[in-house]
Length: 323
Image (cartoon, rainbow, N blue to C red; front, side, top):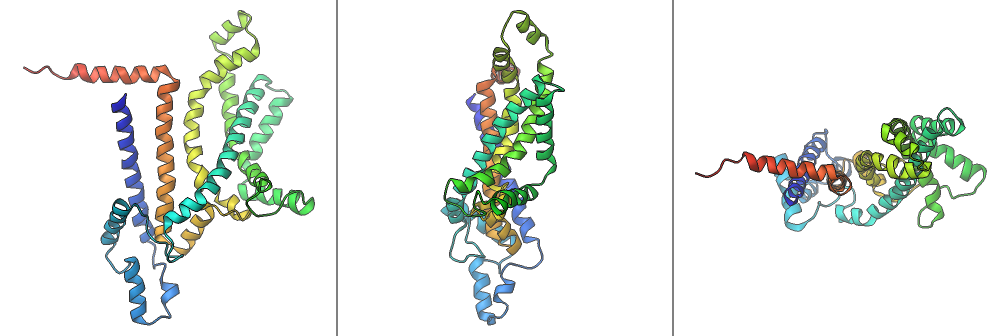
């Protein structure tokens, strides 16, 4: 088991290294550089000092080596080009909790409601609950986030003035952004749970449980939810990864000081270090969530543990004995 976990961790670091390296060379392949507009009116010697400070006067490969050397020796992602004197990790420490807090509320509420609506739609197929759940899922799938945010802002802040249009720091500021972020997960998990539940409730073991007199809530908790848990865990991995960077539209429209807002600004201003550092964080979150999912497989499903053990025994049995 330990060997399996260590192998997954090794793959995690390998994927992280490859993705960050690709991001580094892609962002530097954009014509021009982020300092041209800000230093073009300065004397030549001053411009050269600026380029030397950030290492932009060096060949690209030297800049690449310098990035990893700085990371491994000092644990730093570099200094922002748009905000001189501020390191990328400062932005991460300050604004990641904002994006994560906003995203986790949207994900938890969206997944919970999506699962409940999906089960309700399956148990009441071709009836009013099914139609309502399908309508909500359709709206969540078809309406873009910025359109939904605009509608919500107009109705709840302009027309009725129940909530503030923008701002951050108070519980009331969470309501509208979280509302906009829950609709996507609700649609995704509702559609999945409906189709999966319809498939499961037609299985022989469900019919056997019903014939034994088990009550419907017991069947749902013991059999339906249990058999849909593994795929749900798989779907949660990319959802968790999107907590930090996937809400940048909502953050921009509600003036929320999160990582998504600064990530978009960094791309527009070609802030190399900020883009690479943010992508480093997003990639690390994604691969770490995949690692957690793999470990949860071992805990939730005994068949996975059995498969790992069988593979280990198979490898051991194929090793020739020493003569």
